[in-house]
Image (tube, rainbow, N blue to C red; front, top):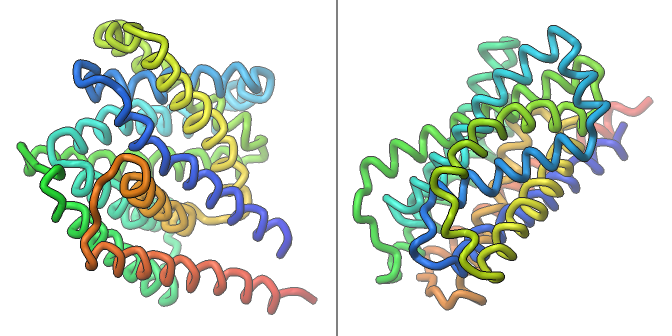
Length: 302
């Protein structure tokens, strides 16, 4: 059990690393590519690929009435998340959009667990997540100190960021419920993301034409769909086999850390000292959470 838990945490960390590259990858897209097009192509095409990668397992989950109900509920989150997330970053700025969407995710996940299962939160989870979220806030402040990090419509962006955080927690929790009903994680992801891909592909048909303007834009879109979504969510599903949703969403707070480091190293953004302090706080919170899980699993062995 300890090895399975460690493998789950490792898969979640790898998923967060992949997701952290999306902002840098999207920065290479021309300005006429809308955030709706980026979001719809990333998880619309990626969701379709997840379904096609495991058609039998996905169909098996959809034939199970209990699993199908959770998959449909999670698909709502899948459809809403990318449109709200990329729009939040466009309106409120990359820094604020990230901190609101990803920082609120663990809170919404814990709320869904409490509503669905009446699961209490451990004191260590509260402290560890609190430290990590404060670090994300510092990170956002550090990036916002860069003149390039403007916020032309902050309030609508913050609202969309909260919607994105709730949507992310919703499909994370729903997929964990499908997995706990005995379905493979690839089947759970394929079923849920396959359904969610339908409205996203419809949006893509309406606003996605600029993505086809050059080989470069197609290549970026392909990476976001294959690397960030297909591979990233296969890893995320593996993590959810052994890690609670509230803990998983906290672990994936590594994503904005990776995004910030890449933005500084590749895109040329600047990070104020408070932002570097935020990086350390995120790592401290995640280290406390992960080490606590491993210690508990070790103590539970016969």
